[in-house]
Image (tube, rainbow over all chains, first blue to last red; front, top):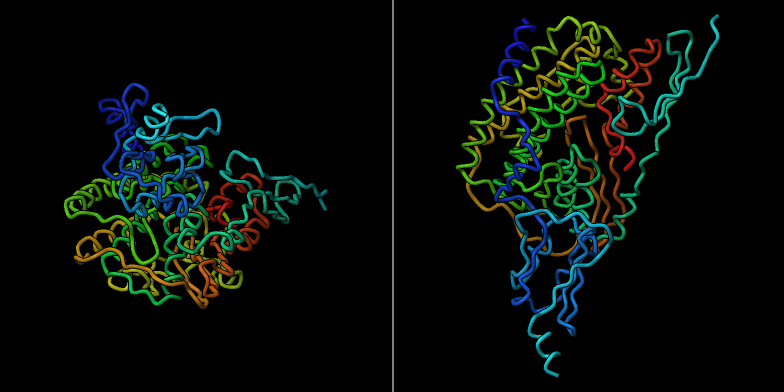
Length: 121
Length: 359
């Protein structure tokens, strides 16, 4: 009985596609719900700092005076708590994982208008 | 009398996914006594509850264990909900039940693969894990995470499943059931597999009761104890009976888990048919004050959550009694008098989850 089970399986395996996707060649598909890396729409952000307070791992820091928003990708666990908490809905879970990092760098978002102003002064 | 030797087993051993150390006192090829020591992966998660606010701690609770992560989150949020008297919407309870049963299927399939790996049947190991992949895909699609779902929260759930997806899940389940039947028949009927499992590590009904075994260990010894019968979540609206076997050997423990996979599939089907419409979360205001016990059935057995709150947003004490911890005395009893070659299989049949145990 058992021998036939696995023989059947062997033939199915011979004539079907592999169950695992061939990763580097075929990119893995992101579903609608998959929690990817955190993305920020900096133009809508008011730097209120609620995301910073809510973040369970302390990965986010928002600075109102410099209009600067930073995230440490290695600390972020993509739980989506900041996305829920954001009053302006400018934080979103993206459709890709964060890139592998070599060091604990912070990814900095700076409001473009602030940059313009400093250039003009 | 033969000379006694002590063979250290673990913390690093091919059969162990996680570190546990056993000193096996041997007389020739027989184990006379096993002395366990745990504590290799202690992370202090219970102490952390004093530093994280109670809404945040759910993310830590989910990370207590990688396999039953959803049920840890579920247990923690149930405890807080009981303290704060939060009425959870019916739909959220059903969704929690569906996800909990999916993680049971995924845990048992993982365990079947590990068991096959322990007695050296690599092909069967791969087949079990191939099926598990399908369950993980469903999880990713509905919750957003493959292992850490992050979908449970205090007062309900984060994500809703739309009716179209529910219908599709039902279809996938039919397919999955057929394939699991094929693979599980190898576990139950194959001559080689049976030689390794039948009559190995018998735990009698009396011993199971006296040593406080939980979950599939206890049910394989003939005691029908299933925490789901308490009716938490949506289990009181679903129709099921605890699965029991009477011999208490490794083969029965394997059979109980296989039957539980089919039971879980049936429970998901029932839940999908009965799921009501409505909201999936309620707003949580205020801080918890009081204490409570919550008992849940995890894939490995009964887990006990004890939460003590003091009216601030930081909890005072959290205690998790995990199923593996309760099963270790029973394991030591089984190891007494067994052959050295059976030790890996016996350790695996309690389905050890050490990072759960040490938190």
